[in-house]
Length: 226
Image 1 (cartoon, rainbow, N blue to C red):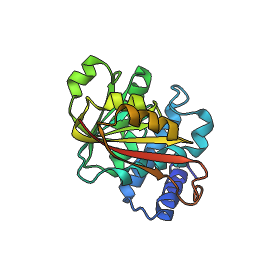
Image 2: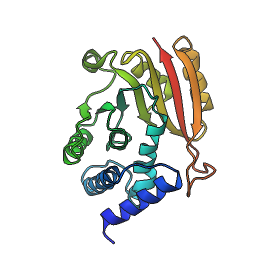
Image 3: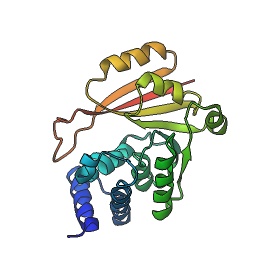
């Protein structure tokens, strides 16, 4: 079995087990993306080398799962600290009507992500090599996004500070975290109480390997107002 076939089989099993139904073209694109990351990872450290055998479950599928939590009226997202394109590229594949910006401060990673976007022919996302807190990035993208997404890159209190200039008058933060986040959330809530309208913590349980969320994966959805 070649890698494309193996990745496709894994993806179909995970999506089917969890009652999700991307089309065949989306599944093929997700499998192609996993192959591109695997190949590039020998030159640029995009994900942990120990994670390569589990790239579909731990990176591609879990990133695609974020699409289930995107508010229905959202049209534009920002992926902060995208690394190798997670969750931004799987999100762009599974939600093709969403437009997005994937940002990372490491130029080698962004060069890889730009290459992936080109090879996968994704015209709904762009990759930017910036620090999100820089004046240049804020001037370019202030008040632009419905959703700011981050995959465990920074503490929530920092994520709030990054997101506020970049979201529209009302917007959302989605943060994917592991372990106990209660103290981290309380600190952010205390500082940004005036901006935080609503928050929900979802347990990212999924079949067959994380039915009771033994991996302690969480998704925090926060609604903000300026």
